[in-house]
Image 1 (cartoon, rainbow, N blue to C red):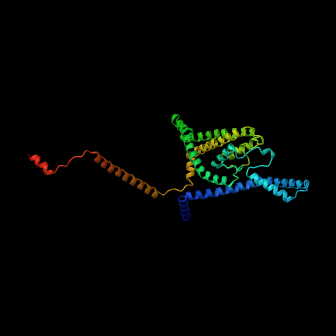
Image 2 (image 1 turned 180 degrees about the horizontal axis):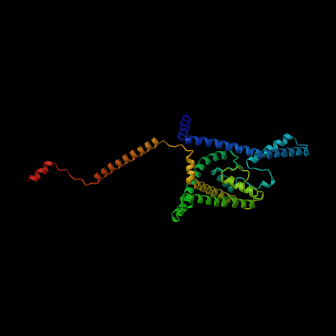
Image 3 (image 1 turned 120 degrees about the vertical axis):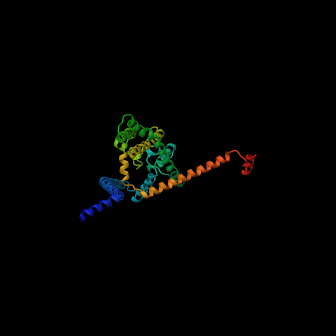
Length: 336
């Protein structure tokens, strides 16, 4: 008896705070996922980092042995300056001296990466004025970009998602949920093909040092707005039609970002995902909903009564002026 009462009380407690328990599991799952990623990245990349450090150490030691007139301190000062310039997108290599980072097309590409929050980091402002302008430009431009993308996606999704799903549901009588799931999968496959696989194949041909995996990696890192900056197109030596190439990449990033948002919005509108998301949301109390409804009703009734009173006043104001007669005069006229 006591066990059944304890079990029922625990069930009621869980049901009453179901959203809080789900949110706690969500936080725990996210933290575990972070730890899992850290463990995998560390185990995979740490050996390669160790090999690269050993290789650089051997190269440095060999260089100092071959150039005995150069001290280790002088070499490190030179390398420090070179690396500092490289962080600003400036290279001392002879095959990279012909590419300017701040011509119009490169600046347009940089502005698109800033507004889309991709931020490759391969090119950064050098002057204090450029850094200050970048802050002001981003503060205004990023909300402007979000507004622009939201407006574009809302218009596209009507013709790409809602109307096709509604057409198959009404015309052929299929279940709306099943049609929505199939449509989302097909749209996702088309988007991945047009904005990941095909561009990756093109980049692997145009970029001499990139294979297909590296090109696909660049497409995913860019359109997901991660923007690590380890792969940036159009930075190779003697890149043909570099200006046109940069403009094309800028258009690709904007169109790809719009396509990604359309796909995400399509999946978010699925009934199953909506139900799943509600598990982690805070539920409103019924009393609060009733108060909001009553306040809304009171406002609507008061506005209706105010509108009726104002309409009566307007009607009285528009009526022609009529002189009022006293009742005594009316009675005398009747007697006569």
